[in-house]
Image (cartoon, rainbow, N blue to C red; front, top):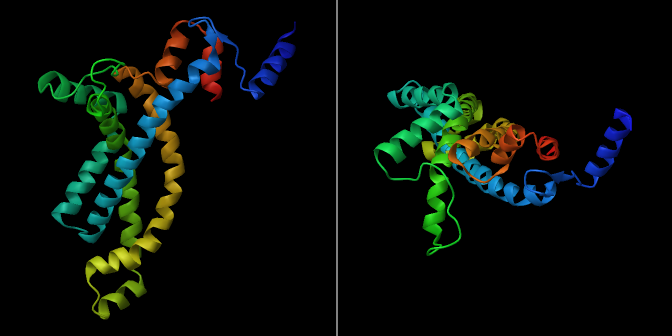
Length: 232
């Protein structure tokens, strides 16, 4: 059939989440994607929670101590997180914590068997989570700091200080409400960035998520699987 006809048929099937069969795994693409999506979701969700908590804490601390050594140190760490590529940071963490110190596994995922304890499973998420957190916390920290510095200059903050409110109360009760509004708009693109960043990470750390299947589908010329993952 003509190319346009075949493409139309493919679009109709994709609308019902039918992406065809993977010739590598001899299974429907959706059957392969669902467990991989769960794996990727765990990594993305955990990284999102950790990097948000870290970035908010550092950004607020930098804004409260503007111009101090702490502020400069946090800015330096933030710029380092922004500048270092994800794959390079992942390799450096593997070299330090897995090869040199031997504290954490370099790659792979705990398989069913043994005692199956939560600790055995969780340790495989530590390095990937640290990598994604460092990669995205830098931008979020800078954004939070800039927003909080602007809010702390407002007249109502000066009024609160004049009334004798403590700095902690000023930040938590007054400044955060206005300072976090612009920051929230950054979270949507951040989730998308973490998801695409996890694709590279999963291949490096050999985690059975969407990223590993995407790379393998390209290497094996498994077009059905590659198209399904790309569509997602």
